[in-house]
Image (cartoon, rainbow, N blue to C red; front, side):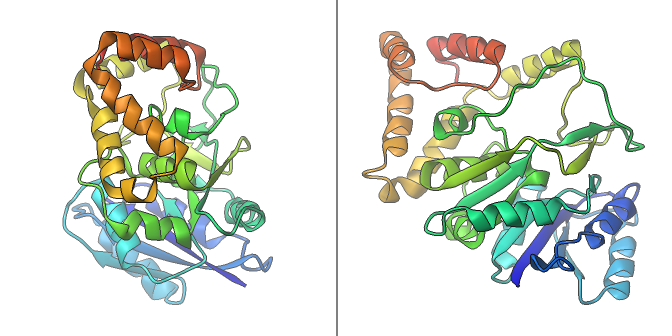
Length: 308
């Protein structure tokens, strides 16, 4: 049977973590013979009693649950540290503290990954089901199209919701080869690696309830006005992040990508920042894209202005 490690980072998650832990322990992948799993948790300096709950679950399920106390580094470094510390497994899954997993989430992911190529890093993710703090479905004004994953998208947009990501040992080894000094989010980093050097499968069927509440570090908006406010805030605060992230990507993996068409595209994308006309030609000649048509149009303007 394959092995799987579910990696959770916690921070002041006492309010919802019991529901999440129970949903993880109810995963049916082991009894169906797909993968034997363990849950490894890093606490990022909680002060609300989260550690007491983790200790309780580790005591009740010592063969399934282990945790350790870390310093407060934030979500990105916390997940990267987990990847560095865990034992070798066939597959790894990122997990947030406040969601709820459907019982066949891991079964579905393992079945897909087992069917994918074995000679490249592979990544599975799915569309999350948006729910409120009581796990009731949320209606959304925003139409979200079927995802079209690819490196030409990954350079400028992340479609991988980290708490749905499941990936193989090969991808984990590429991540921990050298951790980035900067990345927008840990799940975006996985998306870049998988689309540049391997394969990704985006599952349109939701297998997690993605809880939206005031404590979310990041979340998904359901009202158009709220989404536009969030975008404006991100645009003001994140100018230059796309370029900075790609610079780190090329610095770490450039020696692996001399003949890689995706890597050459990323290098060109950074070079055209120096010239409006070069950016205009780049936009005309390449097929970089965001998933939603209106987002694509907005990014064309951002690119022409050189604010990426």
